[in-house]
Each structure stands twice: as structure tokens, then as C-alpha cells.
Image (cartoon, rainbow, N blue to C red; front, side, top):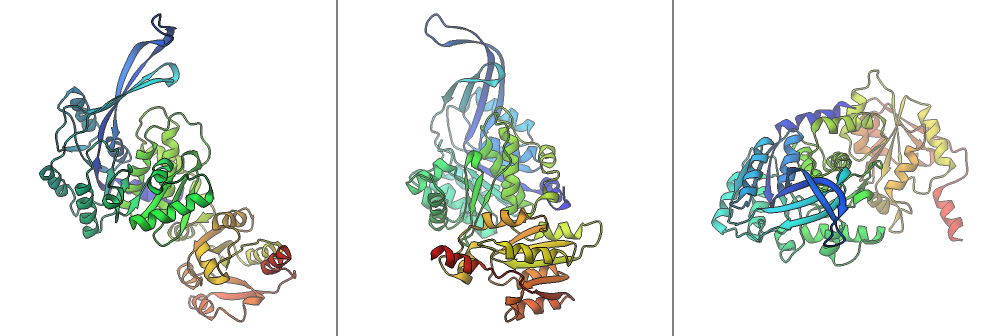
Length: 479
């Protein structure tokens, strides 16, 4: 694993996160189902073991501390035995719990399980608590300049109110602290959540927020774009086995998918994503890289039964080998680090383009480019920059598919997505030894040439050996 992500995961120990939200106790009753009841055709469970885990916002905090960070947890607990159990479990995790409001009952979810964690039944115990305004005002004292990230984990159990949300988000924005919200759509959703740094609904919650089904690429992208505008924030929609899609305020989006694993239990996966995102952002990772890390943590979570916090060493093991072998990069820093940490100096070659309708001419260009150095980086235009260059009908293929095609070529060592119409800034950052263009680029690109030559690099124009272009192919198709 490259030092880039390893250093960030190891620096989680320096990140302080404040978590606000609904506190729950998860109870697991494990037993054997040996016979059917004579009273009704239902199994009789012989209880053998009972264990407890922190649920709701408590599970977010538990994941934060198990990953090495520090967590302050604020919410409402009942004055009962379950509340005492919650406090003891939180203390075992090293979590500082600050309670407010009143409730006679701690929210509790009891899961009855048979052999091999087979679920039979879930019982929910809950009572809507009352949270008075003075108590919630005191919550703002938990956000200080030592707080790197704030998470609001709303399960609609009454601990998160409209005034509290607004005060927390406004203070975070004032202090330049990212505020992440795991929402529960309700009457105050837009008013309460607007202006946060990142909203993280799952598919169902996103459907409830926009009012229609997310059953296609078109509706998913439409919903993400609508939510970023409505809430004035970045939006991450989690899609279960289909991964996660990030919609940024600048209009760009990207998708994150992990290798398929044997799913044991999806309980708490969303909380794991929230915790990992918070720590990653607090450690200084860009949002896209933070989402990748959170996706990996979620894969670990769903492979284990029950509400289980992911450990830092598990995340490091899962990452091992990923960064050194991956080819597609959404931001520059990890690729720059990979080049800097190479055991031997590399002669870096760069090429750039839209590569929208991929053809043999592209293969020839990239093959000749790789022959001029050790490490070939292809700078790929994002969808928005393609539209600016080619018009509103392009690209034909989204950047994810274009990047996958390029990454499949053995001559390509890395693909970096960029959002400007010119790659000049990338050339300034990467300082390539050689930049390769097709001969049709000779008439343009003075800015790019200057950026390359400024650091001692050279620009090479390769003669086209095949009379073929994307525009010609599209004209033939349209004809």
C-alpha cells in the first residue's frame, strides 16, 4: 500500500469528531431453534447468549474510536438500565457521552437470532424524547476549534430538531468545520440540513427527498443534481451492493464500487461510512479519496455479522495492495505521492484528451507515447469539460467508462481525471519529462507547451498513422 493512504489512516488518532444524534442500544439474543411452539407454528428459541452494541449515533462514534479517532457523543438516553448499559459500552470504547433532554426509555433494538446468526425477529422499544431548547443550546459548547469534523446522525427518534440542526450547521460553517449529515427525511429536511458540507442519504432516503424512484442512471443522476442544489451541499448517495455515488457542488459526480464480498449483515454499514468519512476528511483527505476509503470500510463492515465497529488494522489490511495497483485517480495527490515514492526515478510521459469514442488511432498514439518513457499518465477530460470543448451532445460515454477503457490498456500506467478545458495546470503539478500530442494539436496548445517546457520537459507531436478520428466515426454512425 502506498504511504499516502497509510499515513492518513494512521493520522486518524489526531482527529477529533463530535457526533450528535439518536442514541440506541442494540441487543442480540443468540440461541438455538430446536422445535416449533405447540401454541403456534413459530420456532422456540433457547436463549444462550446476550450481547450489546452501541447503535444509531453511538455506532458512528464506536467506529470513530475503533478506527483510532476521538469521539464526543451527544444525544438522549433514558433513565433506565438500558441507558446504563449504553454508558458502560461507550466508556469501553473510550467515547465521551454528553446527554440532554428527557426520556423515560432508552431506544433499544432487540434482535433474536438462531444458529449462524440467522435472524428470526426484531423488537423495537422506543419513546419520542423531549429535548428542551436550553439543553440543546448547551450542545454548541461541544464544538470547539479543536473539533475537526461534526457528524449529525438523524434516525428520527427525536434527538435531532430543526433548531439544533440549524445552530450546529451555522456554527460549523462559521468555524470552517465540515458537517456531515446522515439524514432521515421529514418535515424539516431542507430547512434543517441545508448548508452542511455533505449529505449522505441511502437510496430510499434519497427517493423520499426527491419524490420519485431512483431506478435508472438517469433518475439517480437527476436526483443527485437536484439534492446538491436544494441543500447547497455535496451529496453522497449510498446504493448498497451497487456502491456509492458522490455529487459535488461544482456539478461533477463520481461512482465508487468495491469488489463483491460475501455479505453477512448490512446492519450499521451506513454508520461505518459516516465515521470513516469524518476521520478521512479530518485527516486532510480530499472528498473523493475519503469516499473511496469509506467504501472500503463499508465492505469490511458488511462481511461481519451484527453491529460491529471496523478496526483500523482491518482497514489497513483491506487497503494493502490497492493503491499500488490501481490506475484511475480522481485527485492528484495520491498519484503524485506514488511517483515520489518510486524506488527508482521514473521518466514520466503524459497524454491528454477526451477519448470519448475510443478507436485504433488512440491505441497507436498511446503505444507510441509509452515508448518515450517509463510511466504513462493519461489526463482524461471530465464530462463537464468535454461538454465545454465539444458541445452539449458530448460526451457519448461518461468519464467512468472512458477511464475504464484507458485503464485496461497495458501501456497506460495511470489515468487522472481533470475538470478544466486545458491540462496546463496538471502539467505544472506533475512536471512530466515528455508530453505527447497527435500532430493535429500542433496549431494549438501554447499554454500547455509553456507549462511543460518551464520545468525542462518536451512536447512531442506524433504523426497519425491511421486515418481515423472520433468525429469521423460519429458521422458514419449518424449517416
